[in-house]
Image 1 (cartoon, rainbow over the protein chains, first blue to last red):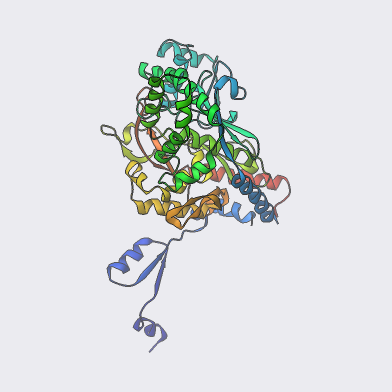
Image 2 (cartoon, each protein chain N blue to C red; image 1 turned 90 degrees about the horizontal axis):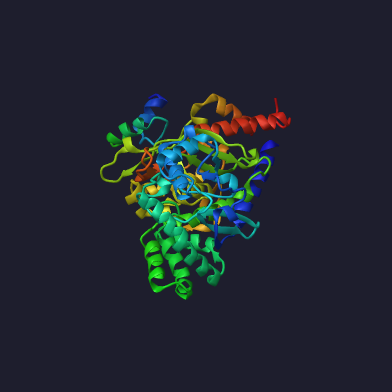
Length: 56
Length: 422
């Protein structure tokens, strides 16, 4: 059995980052999932991310 | 390297905020106590603005202020005078003053005198008129002017004499207490108003005024749950003013709105305002009104959130959700999220429902831009037309642009000084 199939036979431990709808879909199928409140740096605004990085 | 400078500067700002000791001293007349205040000066809330750009409620309050001062006898005369260029309009914030909603302060108005005894700086604020049809929401009908006259000629003299008898009142301790009693000090001031009455009552009764007048004064204060707001605001203002001008600090020392624009000022960037169009408030409206009637965000009262009370302390005031909307759980979440964008936790102002965690203090423009989390503000909603007044209350956030522009200016400043790697 390939490694990937072993994974699917185990109980899944899922942390969802990004779109909350993925979390909701899994939850509606009774899959244990934790949604992480995460967003890209400066909401993905490249100019702001670059300004912030200059201060680090 | 540069981050070390910023950290040190921000530490200095936090130290100044936390060591402030706001104290109520007295009541004075605006033109006699407020710096650079003249007969034809009108102070207003928020960043600088010209008459032609003022929103309805601010215009209404200016009209009312000119009638109250006897500089105009009706709305038309007041508008002509306001347009003429004879009146000097200036932000309250440029005169060590803060004003709720329209924030209009004119020469004859009585003002609270509050001192930060740690740094010997002062802050001033008018006395609160109550809710509904009031000048600060842009109403200027006869009843509004009559009330202002009564406040000048009856309320203020009684309170002034009572304060002479009582001596200074420690506002820091009072704000600490109200946070343990279900207030957040911006949109909920029931406990603060009650504590103030308790503090002043023995001395009001000792003044020379008649029983009827003293009774009127007590009834007026008791009828207005927001009476303490005009004390929590100058307490916050004199707390934050010494935190201005700390080189390399990225912490915010002013947030304010004039009903057209929202403005912030950052300690390391001096007096410069960073502004953007003010947002419309999401909230609960009084019967007969909807969001269509609302003016964009207005007032200096967001000095509360800038200090770490108000919306930042909503977890301490779960009952406020009945006034601004949402659930007590939302209130907890709002306060908790503010720790993500602040530098420190207050060592005196604490939130019981968060295991007495110190209030989130010192908004950092870096953290706001990085996380995308904007400060949460509890506020009142003014009607967009002059002369109507308050139509609701709710929650609002500043525009992100203010923080982004400030961050850009901060980086440019460091670049000019040669402190950044190319």
